[in-house]
Image (tube, rainbow, N blue to C red; front, side, top):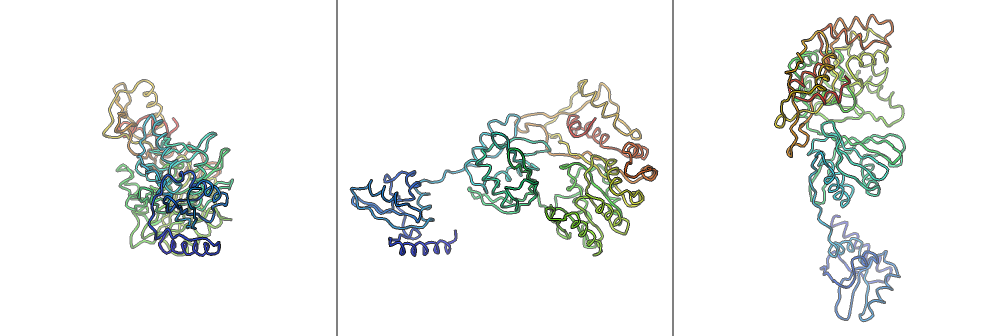
Length: 537
């Protein structure tokens, strides 16, 4: 509270004392003497009374506007040997005195450590969260999630308690459990900051961007995308952490091979065409797209994005946020996109192609002198073409507009400091052979035999899981003549076969995610179990 606000409160308390015919005691300027052994802390909290001045014959008590007459009667009856007087003090004054009588416990914010056995950590972190207010709870979780390079914080209601988990390198780890009482306090703070409702039964989206000073005076930048769903036990929340450093979004940081990078450089250097990055939620689509955007960002190009919502803000880029929670949000999105085309951009980024109108507009923009970058939810490049065909039903737009479909999944990367080579057992060799069968025929396949060596993590105290970060396994489908023919010959664009597209990609010499995954396993970048975790083979 500022000094001016405190002075206003003291003046208001003075006027209230005059109305009630009570003495007034200015706690803002008087020295605060701790009169001990007069009342217990529990009594002071209960009666809203604190001793201000005392000697053998007299006691002056400070009371507030909510102190009851029964409380005053109790005090008089228990101090018959002394002259008892009362003076009105402000609410802030009462709180100041109670901080002296009952100093708040010092909170030691312990760093969260992730290990195979989380029982002790969960207990310790739960105790910390139970001692702090809602804003500090959120700031502490965010700061720890950043330290652990976590992508998401999950707050999950269960039958008996509420579980908090961090997603680290694509895998969830439990860090704490909360009582429902503490959970409701946290949810109220999250809802208020992100402008969502705690009573809504519908899924909601929000965003939090604020600075929080914690009890230990640590400053934390809280920048989160908030998603909620209602479950049988309450509202579950997933908060996606954002790193707002523009330099982080760079093609050099994506782990592209030389051949993959050459494809991307060639495609985005062209002035027109559609580039789609596809994959499930959490596969790094937005990071890949923004890295391309950052590569294109210069003073000679006009770049405009239409997003729902804007996740990262970049200097030099015009970004438009669409409110998906509003009425007629689909028509709002397409209206904005059409308006963007009228103001002559060179590059357009569409946060997500999600319906027929958006798909057609994106394809038409790619045909009429614009480079269009977009994300699309699909499991593979071939599936993206199939889904797009079912949406727009016009094959000619496909073959003329699309330049590149990049599909990707994220797997954990082996820690180079803590990994070792080993000879796989029969079960793992069988997995390698199944993966080999999924690879395209027209690329050079590795020889898998009894002497094949793989790499695995060395688990220790320094790295309890043996992984460090994530890498993407990718496939890049260019719109080759073979793929164009498959699409154009399809008797019905709504049922384009993914198998035929994959066969055409194979004839074109294009690698798929299975081939890229195999290469990264044999190179010791990841493990066969990680590839199996994200791919079906």
